[in-house]
Image 1 (cartoon, rainbow, N blue to C red):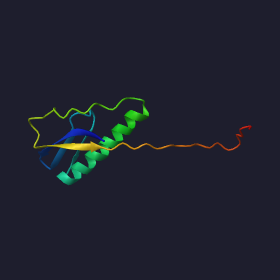
Image 2 (tube, rainbow, N blue to C red; image 1 turned 60 degrees about the horizontal axis):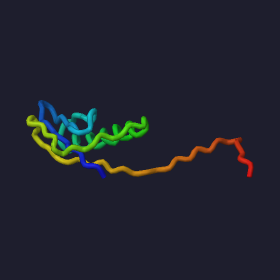
Image 3 (cartoon, one colour; image 1 turned 45 degrees about the vertical axis):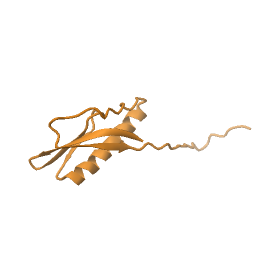
Image 4 (tube, one colour; image 1 turned 90 degrees about the vertical axis):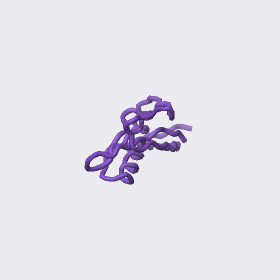
Length: 95
């Protein structure tokens, strides 16, 4: 599990959300619960993109802060491993 820093700003009509130490992870929503849900989803999408491109994940830096943020809190990225097997019909392997 990696712990990053999420911030939220209340703006007219909603909430702007961003992960300070994971560049590119940001969203907006009508309310805080929805902003939290969308931000978590955006972070997973960005992490999967980084890994699929062979890029490292950004290093968490919980010392980052934003003086304009209304809320700062940790956000957690849980990594899981999976295997994928592709079978192509018609290709036999000799024993």
